[in-house]
Image (cartoon, rainbow, N blue to C red; front, side):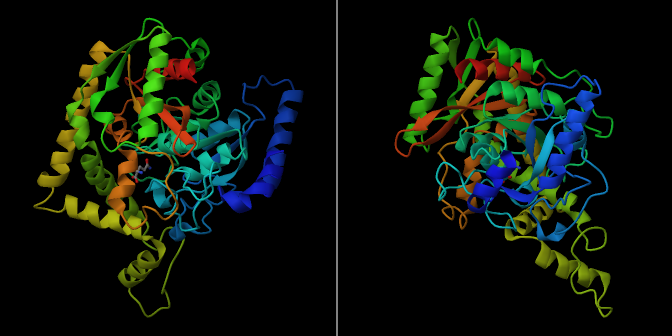
Length: 451
Ligand code: GLN
């Protein structure tokens, strides 16, 4: 049924870069066979999933939506991919994204943009916009994403879905094509909180193949999603993450969601996190700095594209021609920004300062969580914007992740849950629920209570 739906609507939505119809049917039959042989399978066995094209898959191409990896088929599965397969999930195909997960609209894909199923002249968010659009268009019941600065929560919010950034290190980066290694976090998309929790549980947990993997049990997210109770909980509204610059309808739905939490028995207080106002600036130093190092591996020798290798040019010339053609403008902008911020003489002023801001943000969270169980804010300042509206203005594009970035810098968990449509444009609004490190279950518990 999902393959039929993809065939019917994906020409318009373009959520997928690759549809693996035959393989998906084979996987589904294999699950039936495992079940028939008496194997105890988990709750998601046989359930289809759309998989972001940033995860390596040994039987499907993996491009991270870049020309430089066009046609590349990885020799191994990412840990997340492997765990999806072990749990019996059926991978429908690979979803579109901003190139190397850099962007907030999926317009930075080298293979063309994805459209928001709620209104096809709008973006589906990004960078995991193919995943959010696939679930919103009923092309898949579940999808995977990665969240480095908001790339799961922001597309989930603007597509009316649940999206989760787990605690950093609690879902494996092994086989995730790296953007910013100290921030990249795989997480789930679903149409409700319990489904997201089931997918979260299916692929998270310690992985010895990821050196920053946390060796701790996965928080009891499924149990929390089932509990769906906020009575007696203390909830902090982050003062710095609302107000001026936010769309009125977003603020209205956010306020109503907070009132709902109060009516369900939570105690809501306002909390100030002063360093959050510097989060965006710090992120756009740290993210590009890490990317400039990570993307050095695309050297025209090891992977994918190679341009101008006709026997007359040096390795450096081939590398340069390949990168000129293989990387899109946003990726080049970030590599240049990152190499500049890391260069001698500027390192302390830019990278060093950004790391200090990161520490301050972590302290703001720690101080807040002394008094409250979770923090809330709108997930995004506006609803889905129009295709093309922000492509010439990187700063306007970067603002889409104003509310989500503090959590990435601090490494804790956050979930976005739909909280209605903005009255002015009838487009979805997301409520962001931020929880302490390894207390992801709290975000699920609150999210399930308000959905
Ligand atoms: N939109 C942010 C960026 O452009 C976040 C991306 C992400 O989380 N991968 O970097």
